[in-house]
Amino acid sequence: MNTSPQTTAFHIRLCTVEEATNGVLRLPVFHTTSTPALAYLNPALDVGMLSWMPLDDGLRLGLPDSELHALRARLYHLAARCLPALLHARPPGDETTPVVDLDMPCLDRRTTTARLAHWREATGETESAGFPRTMAAGWLAASRGETDLPPLAWSFDQQLGGAYARALLTPLLEAYGSCDPLPAWPSNALFHIRYDVTLHGSAAACWYGLGPERAYDFFKHLSRISTAIQAAVRRWLPVLWTGDGALFHHPREAVSLLAYSSLPPLLARSRRCYTYDALDSSSLKHALSYATRRIQRQLQLWYPTLAALGHPIAEQLHPRWHSKWAAEFSQRPKRLCTLLANEAWLIDQFVNFAAGFHEHATLSELTGVVRRARTMHATLDARFRRWWDGRQAQALNGLILLEASSALSPEPVRLAITLRRKDAAGAASMPLVLHATRGPAPPEEDAQDPAAA
Image (tube, rainbow, N blue to C red; front, top):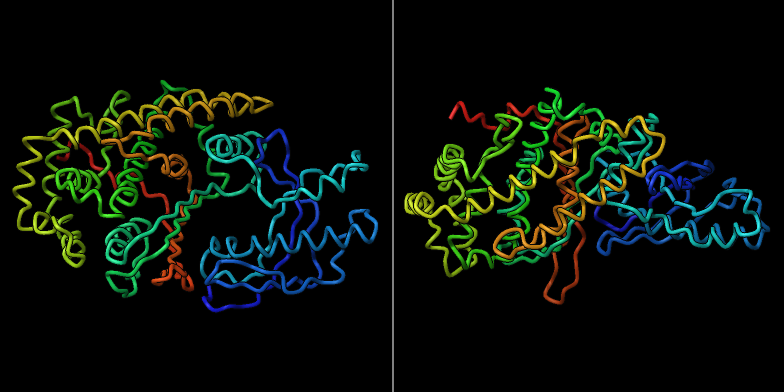
């Protein structure tokens, strides 16, 4: 996306949200087809302002002229404000005129007397999100064949210094398939960063085709889900916990997290063991072996960052001390074991979550689907509040479900990272948007078979 102020054309598509689908299914009602409207976008502030709207776009809605003009103006102003986020989420190279979906609470002619009052409440956004929305989207795709569904989406915002941003974003972009190097910026620069991860909405349909829990196909699919969850947690926990540098004031905790994040996902060995088991001496031995072998690589990544910032414990994390940290792990693996135990609990919850979903695909309503998804969301939310040494990981709740869904779907996962550099006064500059796309990889390519260790 161009980073200079610009005028952008757009169309509007009015939609109504089907109440029975938990706010997932948008039913297009009207699409403006005349000359597109124009919005003035200021990327530095990430805002869009209406510049011009067509006099004749076919939008009538059966209202008197005065009321129609007021409604049209509201809709076009609202669409212009929604336009920057829509453009950020588009894949690079897409030059088509964007279409902004606006959700209308009521478009039923049987409620003519109240129509105008309802239309004034248009927000352009659906209210529901998270686990219930994702599983409802899957139910629609599986049982009714709906394909025009909103994407599964997750976003997260944080402040990062320039050195930390480089250390965290480089492996993250590589994991999502980007090979382009990051541009140069000073180590003491300050960025506001937004992460957006999206997946096609129909991908959630795969949860309804897992089969009975005792079937071999169920185990095979859950193995893929397990490796996806392991990779997602290890990929994103450092983003959550190391961005402010506070974790590095406790070297053992920092190195434990870095070693854990470098472990390859473990292929499931049986229906009772989908990942590393901290209580199994053989499984723990393999985990410690991989962790100690990869410590030096992690120290080589993080030592230059900490040294450039003059961090007080930078010397303790010099790569020359990797053998000392390896011995520390072998003698005192408690911190790593806690992370592995939490990971095993998380995957066990998803195994229970998946069991029985295939039965819902044949039902005429999705009440049970929404209830099951809400229970799962509440369970993970409570556990994530104190995930490791008092640190929270609630921000990963929706992302983990998205990544687990991607393991069952041929749809690609798209990552967009928007960086806004802030000056001494706190004002943000024009954004730099980084894109990466990761297709679903078979677990054999990314995971580690314990038999090969």
